[in-house]
Length: 234
Image (tube, rainbow, N blue to C red; front, side, top):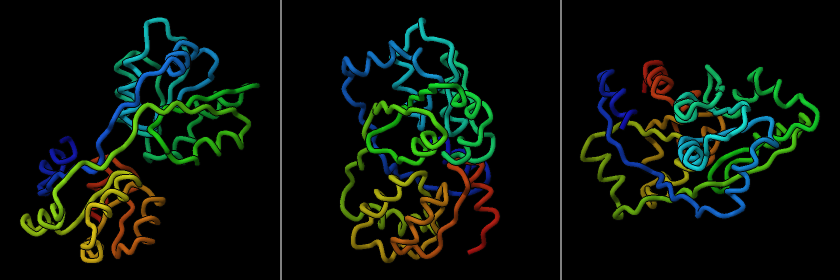
């Protein structure tokens, strides 16, 4: 796991317990039609690496020249490796940072601007809402669903105790929801541990659920987490 490797290089011990399983949705004729008619969009926004991987699998060599956007560098790399023109925020790994990109603002400033958002089932609505407020039409294409992996009861608490872990990390809002579900009756105990999250939105979620020490890393990358770890003393 890349994050664990980055932490290890920095002298930080970590233990990985994936909180999300990705299940691709069936490819439908409607989904195929969207990819075959990308030319009607002024921009395509990809919100995650799974969405990027599934999207490029369906693209052929006849895609139109249009700008692609992602919320982070890792997702952008998946898109760029397919030879597409991709833009992403250099600071901040979230929708708010993406909305400030000059290239995106320029794309949606055109008359009749239409944007396609590629995502998983049930993603957040903020990005589409802000784009519509700026006059763009927005379509969604959902490519996968997120599932909580099947673990034995108590595995999270046992892992923390056996490996003497003194902090928790989640990389998304859904990851936090699954963390709390996996903790079950042990959540009040685990809520006392420092919790590192990628954004103010997830920070608010965690605090509302009773987490006592929540740190907003301002991004989901390993670099953002390392900065947060080094700046906090618990």
